[in-house]
Length: 366
Image (cartoon, rainbow, N blue to C red; front, side):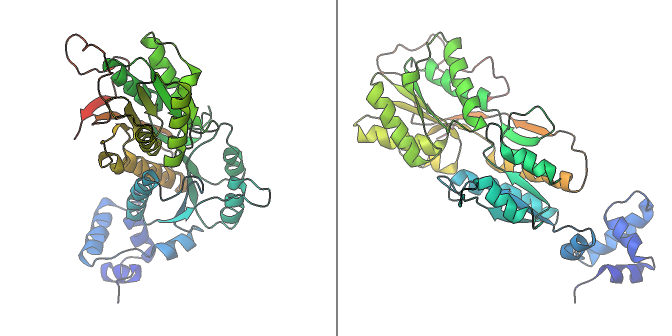
């Protein structure tokens, strides 16, 4: 039979409520009593009944993770690693995860379908939301219902909405700086969906870096993708049709970068001989494609942990020290980027680091 809280109380000759408070670290219990209770709990391998404690506090001890249904889904390597970080942290705090992938139907928005099904039934204590959109309707929906939530990505609002994110703009500037350092001047961009805030920040980084290097922005060098490999393939083919002078491309995530690699091969272009390709995210798959992908690397697993930590604090009605968590990014230089055809080596070191993004570093990997 597993050890119960009542067993601990009887052995220590104190009340069950005192045991509960001591295990929770309540300062109203003396430090000596807390130490005795926690020591005995460890000795007897006691684990709290999270389901029962959740019922007592009118909680489910479940947090929801809302990921896209289509065209992206949980099969996207980014979301798999992100969900792993959430799950590994949540389990240490006695929480489980409910995965939800919104699917619009009957004229309702995808977010409305998801929340009407989960939120109204109070199946979760809070939600982690992905892919924040411009003027995201989910924010007001959840605030009106007093449901704690955290975004993966900055939703671009000036209120107290909580989010975790990588430094999108600085990361893209670093990618473009790297390509410019290799002599490239005709640098294309495969952007994400126009309704997502991450797309706008990454485009800002692309345009800012070009301007800083005195390279004119050319709309014909930019094509919209959808953060999937087929979307990246179609966008790259579009760019090559319109702008055959392109010698390099930045893709707004690694899956689209892999699509760009495939498009280049389809057109008979050598990568990196004829076309250099740089992605964004740092998914493990990027190291195993041919050629291995140069990419701006996010701490994906750590983003998941940070989102779960922030949400659980909100669920437990704690005030987070920081409502916005922004991670610096790194550049992993692999085989898909090389010197522009016909360009001269720059003076000095071949390695280039942007002076405007001191928090970001370049890491060469093979």
